[in-house]
Structures are given as C-alpha cells and as structure tokens.
Amino acid sequence: MSESNRLAESAFSSAGGAEWPAKAFEGVILARCLAFIADLLVVTILLIVASVVFGVLGILSFGLLWPGAALTPLLVLAYFTLTLGGRHSATPGMRWQRIELRAWNGNRPGYLQAFLQTLLFYVTVTVGTALVLLVPFFNKRRRCLHDYLCGTVFIRSDV
Image (cartoon, rainbow, N blue to C red; front, side, top):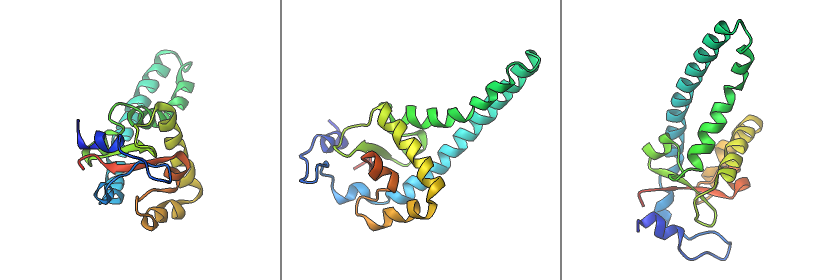
C-alpha cells in the first residue's frame, strides 16, 4: 500500500478531516499553477480539434451541424471532471506536478464532487479572482476558496 493510500485511511482529526503531514502541502500552490497551465494547453488543443471537426461537419451538412460547435466548451468541464473524478484524482498536468485531489476525509473524490470542484473553480475565479488567488496563502493546507466550498484538498502524491 502506498504512503498516500495510508494517509487517506489515516485517523481523522477533530475537525473531521484526514490527518496529513505538513510535507503533503509543500509547494502545492506552485504545483497547482504549473499544472493548470499544462492542462490549459491540453484543453486548448482539444478545443481546436473539436472546432475543426465541427467546422468540417458543418460544411458537410450544409450548416446543420454548426450549432454543435457551441457544445465545445463542455469539453473543458468534461476534461476536468473526468480526470479529477477518475482513478488518479488528478488531471494530466497535476500528475506531472505530482499532486492529487482528495476529499476532506482523505478519500478520492467521485465524479459529482469533481464536477462541483470544476464548476466552483470557474465560478469563483470569474467572480472573485483576487480572493481565489489569496486564500491559499493564509491557510496551512493551501486550500483555495472553491476547495473549501467543495470539501476538497490538494496534496502531494509523492509524500
């Protein structure tokens, strides 16, 4: 059993969250930023490919399938939801940075919690960018505003 799995099954604190060593949160802010940039590159490629596909389909269908291109932003939501809710609890960028998403109790999040995490991330960034960017600097677990709202935390997967 890996160390991160042992941490997930560890005793719970009085606040209801799993116990993690302080080392599990070292460098998480920078890792999250770098992972997000990497994931944006992947998502951009996916959006370009989807736009080309819908463009070609639109031409072949004499414009009937062009409205389908409006669904391409759902690729972003699906990308983050399916990867965060998957078996690694991390997007490819997060895996590259060796971080993963965990529910507050130490378990891996399900797809519903991953969907909520993704949705609240984009809502909180849109509404209060400064607040989202400042919150992790003032708590020891480096949680952002949407992490608090979803009951999640990012930890180092190599701890």
